[in-house]
Amino acid sequence: MHPPISIVALILSGVYGDILAETAVGNISGLILIFAVVVYSAVGVAHHAEFLAERFGQPPIWNSNIDNECRNC
Image 1 (spheres, rainbow, N blue to C red):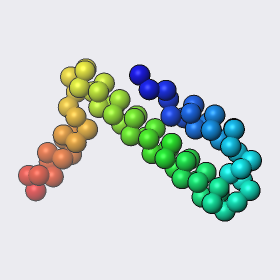
Image 2 (image 1 turned 90 degrees about the vertical axis):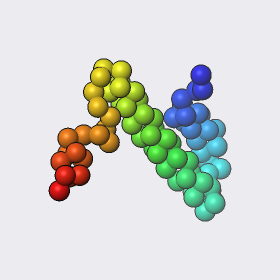
Image 3 (image 1 turned 90 degrees about the horizontal axis):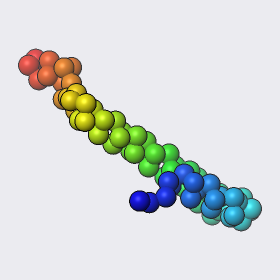
């Protein structure tokens, strides 16, 4: 099992926070790091939601009633 990416990002930002804040390249790198963590976490939440929906017998997110009604239009 891999370590949670948010904990790794927190440790890296704590260790290298001063270096990241001193230069423009560091600021951009910090922004990219934060953006990557947010996107990775959102994808993980969506994946977990799909897993739980499948486990409990609900239709997948992309196969909702709204989609079925729009296909018949």
